[in-house]
Image (tube, rainbow, N blue to C red; front, side, top):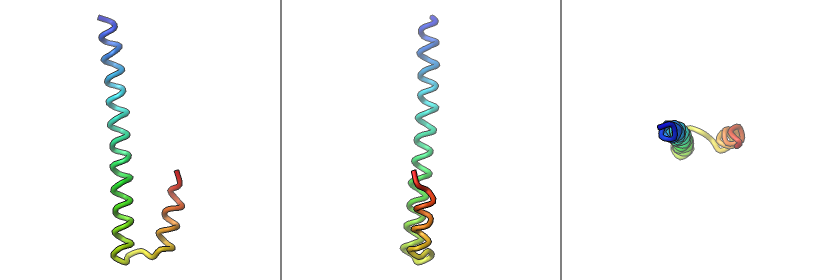
Length: 58
């Protein structure tokens, strides 16, 4: 019985990490798409986009 509870807690922890990772990359991807759209429609110039890109260095 104890082994089952340990496996269940590990699985729950893994699900939380997976959800957090998914949401992080989803938001990151959407922000990049917004940035490219702003560039394409002329709301941002290239120097401003470069400053934004350099601000979010990973």
